[in-house]
Length: 305
Image (tube, rainbow, N blue to C red; front, side):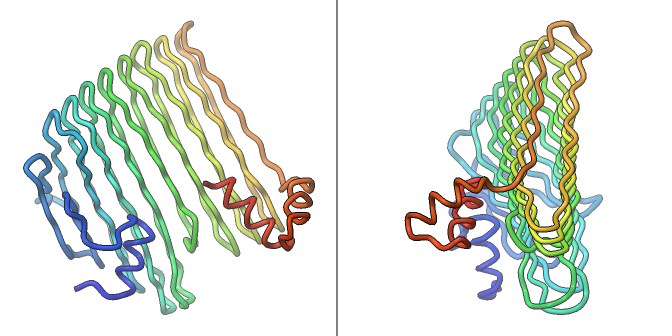
């Protein structure tokens, strides 16, 4: 049975305002809280460790899978999920973890997600992390994502952490085969004493593979952020890394983009920028009637959108 708090968290991490009609698996405090499969998408509980196998049949089009996780105070959860994205399919997978901590004990979720995007398949993967609650206990989320994209496949990732997570280490590893494509958009906000580390490694192993990684973040108060973005070209292909951060108050941001070419036809580019909000942007919005705080919030929301 889902409480009002559970339903609020589901809306935040998976945009679910009601139980979805398609395939889904809802996990609450380490246990299953609801599951549904379809004719083309099966969800099977792993037998050797906690987690699920999601099997999407070849040629499946226009379907989605929601796999949200809800966690409360004093619990530590670890899952291993494997996704088989069948050849020539086109699907959306929405994952996310929300923590409601109302006490003094920490709540922690570690998730290892492994994806096999088969030949000619297209997958959009949306991962949202969110924390709330009046308690002093930490909210900790450590996702690890491993993706193998076969010939002609496409993997599009949206990785979002906008509120309430005290500590996170995000590890993402992607291997691209011939003519495979990767698009990554990362959005991250830290406040107070929060810390976040994001490690993204992309290997272009197949001819004519392409990758684009865009990371945007805002660090406020005394929070800390570290980004390691690593792209390696082993064959003819193109890759672009861009990391943009807004730093405020007494925060600290470190951006470490790295590109390595092992082939003469690998074309790799990296860009990184860290700075504060431009004063002329604030002034322009304030002349329209906004207070300085409202103008600041408007700029940050647009930056992280």
